[in-house]
Image 1 (cartoon, rainbow, N blue to C red):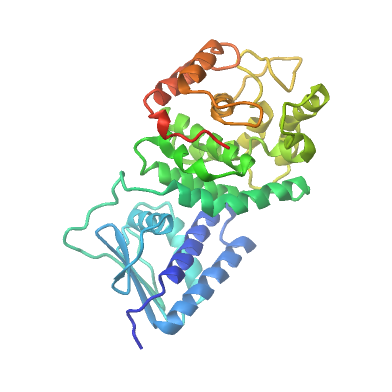
Image 2 (image 1 turned 180 degrees about the horizontal axis):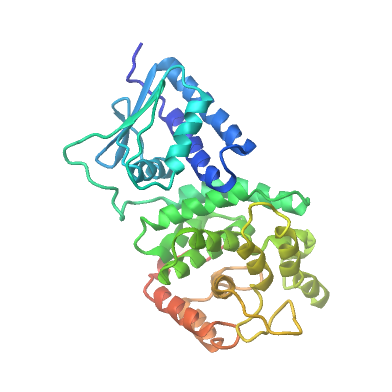
Length: 381
């Protein structure tokens, strides 16, 4: 038996399930059925690996993941796992044959813990510890990250989630949360956050592309303001779901190749209200997403829709979404219009400052975007 020969794809799948467990424990708690489902998936994959190699040892060496002394391929999954272990000062994780679900749950709980001291897990089939490896350095904040891997990974899941919404089924808070976690992790290793839009060049699912763009642009705006932690994540989730109300608009209107007529436009303007009414009944979705879905077409000066008899104090997230939404609409190619260059977009948005657009947030956004090489940005499909 070759104990060094380890299935890299299997390792990636197993640690992806472990990462999902850790993420979802924060959302649901360890007793939730979703956690048990993810635990079963991870345990099944690990048992397959341990049937071939009675011991699987994962080490961090020079910011790379090494499995049974074989360097693993770099990927978003491995980078996230490295960051997760590094945060807990874990340099190696040893799993052995006989591993149980309860042990795996214990590991996920420890990795989810908010304690700052080094984490040490010791069970009959799990051992963690620290290593001193010459030349090892902390995970670089400028480590490269492939955004296209993220968008490809989540596209089908996003479409399934929105399809469920159209069928009046509850949206998966865990699925949206995982998408946003991936984007936030990727942003932490991307020096030019606005260039994160580049990998969307090849995507052709408009609603997914648009929602992802708004998420990325909102996260970038929030980071410019120094927003971190759970508020940053809530802004990302709200952005991904801002247009969920469109799932309740007839598809022939949404997919119409030309501009909507007056009747169709009146129906389209119902999507903010429909989205908010839907999200408010979805467990696990932050209330900010409900507010943002309702407000994202209301301007800084109160114009727009839905109309209200009294003025609203819009959330900062709603202001961000309006800015991102207008920018993405102007830069995207549609059947009835060509994309605009940044100079023209900037001019239009500046003319809307104090009207539909928040003055300070818009100026900050345009200043950041003016530093981006717009030849590198896709123009949409």
